[in-house]
Image (cartoon, rainbow, N blue to C red; front, side, top):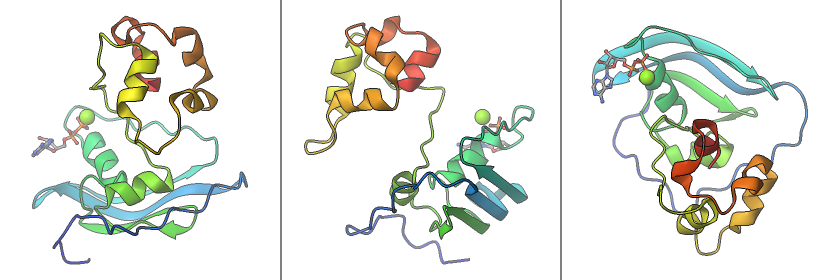
Length: 162
Ligand SMILES: Nc1ncnc2c1ncn2[C@@H]1O[C@H](COP(=O)(O)OP(=O)(O)O)[C@@H](O)[C@H]1O
Ligand SMILES: [Mg+2]
């Protein structure tokens, strides 16, 4: 395990190569263990998620599902084990690097401006030199018909898309 000294991202973290559409495992996790602070919550987690595959993780409240997902997304530092996306290892506890590699955690708490429209929410969230709000429709075309609707009037699933 690396020493838990810092969680800051290097300013020059390189963007991951774009996914080329090839079949095969995208996310691979081996022997992952993690927890909250020094408390162990899960261990020995091996999982593989292929391109286009949906994997459901089931368990009772408190089983550790959220802790595992936060760890995969780099928002919590793994206690041991490895995570790789498209064969590239992810450094533990580096949320921005995980995000660039394509891992995005969409929590139940959606943190939207409910009085602003879909378009307005995207404008507020967009980095100044980042992609234009409308380019998000390539990923979530269903939002087009809700473009000028307040986020608070969207369904739960539409809010998660947003
Ligand atoms: N913010 C937190 N700080 C400390 N412990 C936490 C925190 N969130 C969850 N836990 C503990 O981590 C364990 C796993 O919780 P969690 O991953 O949220 O489970 P699940 O998502 O499966 O319901 C539980 O014992 C819970 O009490
Ligand atoms: Mg949970």
